[in-house]
Amino acid sequence: MSDRSDAVRFAKELFDVTWRQNQADHVADELDAFAQAMHENKGVAKPLYHPLVPQAKKLDTMRRVIADLGLSKPTAVIVEALVNSYRVKLLPVVAESFRARLNAKHGVIRARVTTAAPLADDKASALQSTLQKITGRGVVLETKIDPSIIGGVVAQLDSTVYDGSVTRQLARMREKLVENV
Image (cartoon, rainbow, N blue to C red; front, side):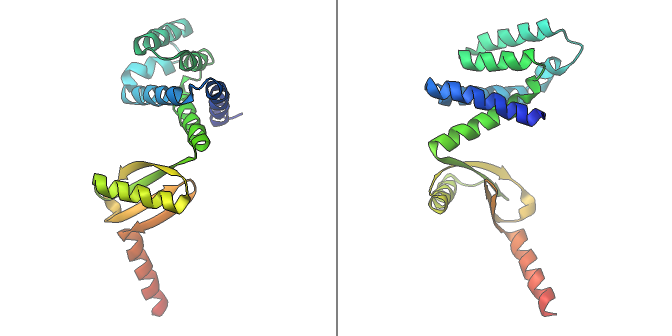
């Protein structure tokens, strides 16, 4: 079994338990924050991945972090399980899969939006509203800046991509010019 499928299985099991206990929203926030903290503090988290650091020391460190952050019991259990099974590197995938399950349960879809420059709040709200009308579901925007698209917006909702970038429009114009020659 691959690491990704193991992470998805961990997330599914955790989600099933926390959904029944009405803790899923809180656990999703904790997992996201914990995974983000590990990503931002790679130097601190690095010993957790190193094979020469004793397992007991890794578990001790993780338990201190869990206590310091005041994480809930379900989050603490999954983090400890990942450390015990030498799979702490799967935490970001577990968090992502857990959030995807929660969003699906709430009827929410995540839209990855790429623009050439930061979106103003009113423009982001208008885009979010438009995407909600298109999908008929709630939409959570994740924005990314990529100057190479020159202008416009590229929105990805699950496997569907809406490409309204200037780069794509120029490519279409070039294709039409080549066809007419």
